[in-house]
Image (cartoon, rainbow, N blue to C red; front, side, top):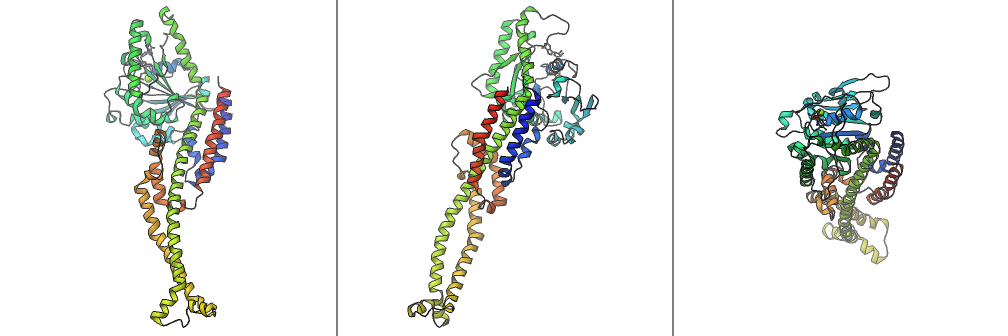
Length: 456
Ligand SMILES: Nc1nc2c(ncn2[C@@H]2O[C@H](COP(=O)(O)OP(=O)(O)OP(=O)(O)O)[C@@H](O)[C@H]2O)c(=O)[nH]1
Ligand SMILES: [Mg+2]
């Protein structure tokens, strides 16, 4: 199994490399690469979600070897419980939600936004169990059918989404009685999880299979779950579904169930891989942030390029007017005002040009340059920015679904940037930054993926 310390070492190496290579580029676009890692700064996290009474808490207790969580038929637990070990010199015990969201060593500050109702339903339990040295487990209230946000008092799926974003491994538990038919489960799989977690981080479990009357009954439940899952995820391939049950304490496992014992053990072993999954998770987040920024930089580069084209035309026209003003400005002055006595062109023909003949042509040229600059600054550029913001999609060719998804995530950020700092974008070397981002994606991230796989 992947040891926590080798994962830690790789994590530090990765963080160093990211700060070195990407820190300055992210900073140039008003982003802090460290923010990206804040939710991932604590221990690897295993999130256990699923239908009420599917056996989440029973499984956690079995995994830890202690009765950490209350269990029982019907919805039993209405709290999110983070289970971890006490710090050095600290006693076992419970920490209330308020302290959990205020502790800046922990990654849960974002949960504060779900309000007091959630905080009252959030706690941390600290128990001395070796498994928890390298990871923390979050037990959650079961998903229900006819429940609204008002009934819960907080946005349950919002909380699940936030935790899923932080989690390195998500166990989604079903049972044969309600194999994928619960409304909240449907919403979680349909929207919350895809927005927060990669597919590879979710383990599907059909638990309590000992309650199936016979193999036919089990196959029926399994089939129903597969069908429901395929409807919910839209995936063509069926993910692995662990078929498990909790062996009753002190009782022998009935012979017909013995063949399924392996599944439960494999699920437990999969949880041990959370530290390694954390590394993949971090890489995944960095990869995503880099690709998002790369697309943003591409759009800004196109914004800059488009304006430079316009500026070139204006400059050409301005230059023409400038030369005309330089040559003829004083000729018109002489015609209408009677001075200067000798125009620049006259002095040229006579061969008597002196510095005094250059004063008016230069004044006229300067007037043209100054007014062109003013025109560009006051009218042409703001109009270009306004038009670009109105038609942001024209900055890029979005030829793949992946690019379209990325674009949907950064569109507002880009709009804000153009509203606030459009001028600054003209002076940034976007193409160089894009090269750096792409080099990181092509080389460094790949190298780290290989390293994690090698050490597995
Ligand atoms: N037969 C059988 N019963 C189980 C199994 N797992 C759990 N149970 C029982 O099912 C009931 C519900 O288990 P819990 O672990 O409390 O379920 P939960 O998912 O945590 O439920 P909530 O916290 O209410 O969402 C308890 O009475 C358990 O003893 C199992 O694999 N087989
Ligand atoms: Mg429970």
